[in-house]
Structure formats: structure tokens, C-alpha cells
Amino acid sequence: METETAVKGRRSIRRFKPKPVPEEIVRDIVNTARWSPSWGNTQPWELYVVTGEALERFKKANRRKCLHGEAPASDIAMPEVWPETLKKRYVEVGKKVLTSLSISREDVEARNEYYGEMFALFGAPCMILVCLSKSLHMEYAMLDVGLLMQTVCLLAHDRGLGTCILAGSVRYPGLLRELLSIPEDRVVVIGTAMGYPDWAAPVNHFERERAELDEFVTWVS
Ligand SMILES: Cc1cc2nc3c(=O)[nH]c(=O)nc-3n(C[C@H](O)[C@H](O)[C@H](O)COP(=O)(O)O)c2cc1C
Image (cartoon, rainbow, N blue to C red; front, side, top):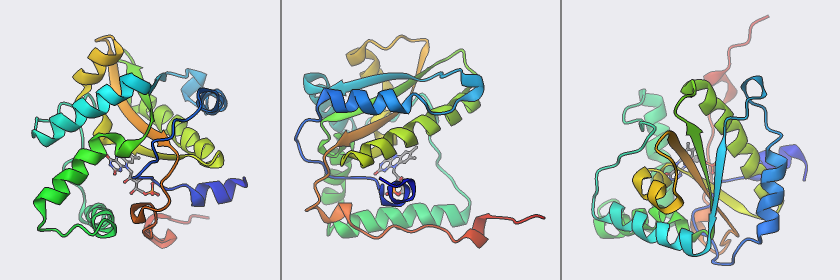
């Protein structure tokens, strides 16, 4: 796939088919993604590829915690306030998701059911979880993780797979620590759901938006 086609064609998938992803395909994706750049080639990322029974247990428990309103305890603090323009974009994508699912703003039950789905990784049969050592200079290591995850997402897209980077996957890191035996001196950074997209689901089709260049580029010569 052309790079430009891959970059523009990748989108966050929010409904997956249950069909498992063959391990050799995930291995191939990760094997290529390890060529992502990182600060001084330090490659700080530590990955867990979670599938099968372990993932099912996680999805069930993560969904339960969300629906029971358990207070989030992410290792990486989640943003709660944004400058107005950014907040508008955040609200807008949320609206688009719910509209595509025919969920009205007032329908609290349906909205909660959707959040439960999100915490169950939208039915994905695979999750790639990234951890970092707590000893690292976190800001730069996070840049490295971002580069790796985008590379994983593009490679997955190239292979007909869908992905969704999910803050919702790491809201209860204690769950992941216990299930995956993640040591206490590691930061649970982010999980990415991966699987075959359910293209029949409208939530995988709504039109996405991006700011125009003039809104974020300063040209200097
Ligand atoms: C760090 C990060 C965390 C995200 N967490 C979530 C999430 O918890 N739930 C969700 O539905 N999408 C999540 N997303 C996906 C974004 O909403 C999505 O990337 C954005 O709306 C742009 O859309 P696109 O990926 O389809 O181009 C996350 C993306 C990133 C980069």
C-alpha cells in the first residue's frame, strides 16, 4: 500500500469481527514496527500481545469496572480540560460516534452500554499493550511509544486489519498488572485494540475531520 493511502485510509475501528488474528500476522507487524524511531535508538517500549482467554478475561473485567463506575486510576494522567478549540473537536468526534450508533444524548442506558463496549475493546480479538520502565524520562519515552503505535496501526491497516488506540484500555492498570503479571516498576501506557473491522457497522464509516493547515502551521522563510 502507498504510504499516503495508508496514512489517510487508517481510521479508528470501533466494531471488530470476532475472527482471531493469526499470531504470525501480529508477529510480522511488530517485527516491522520495531524499526520505528526512538530517542537515541533506546527503544524503551515493552509490549504485551494479549489474545485468547487472557484477553477475554480482561475485556470482561474492564467492562465491569467501567459499568460499575469504578474511579479511573490510569498510570498516565488523563486530560480533563482542553483549550476551547480542542475541546470542540473532542466533543464533535464523540457526537459523531454516538450519532452513527443512533444513540441520542439523553439515552443514558445506551450510552453506558456503548462505553461498556469500548472498555471491552469493541470486540477486538487482540490487544497490543505498551509499558515503560518507571525509571525513564517519561515525556520523551511517550513520544517513542506514539511513534511505535502509529507504525503498528499503519502496518495493521496495510494487512486489512483495523486498530483503535484506547485510553479506555488502561484506565484500570491494576487489572492488567494482575492478569499479565506486569511488574510494579513498569508504567502501563496504552493499549491498542486490533482485529478485522466489521465494515457493516456504521460506526466504522462516519466522516472524520481534521483542522486545516492554516489552523496549526506557521510558515517561516
Ligand atoms: C492516545 C489515544 C487514546 C485514544 N483513546 C480512545 C478511547 O479511549 N476511545 C476511543 O473510542 N478512541 C480513542 N482514541 C481514538 C481517537 O478518538 C481517534 O484517533 C481520533 O478521533 C481520530 O480519529 P481516527 O483515528 O479515526 O483518524 C484514542 C487515540 C489516541 C491517540
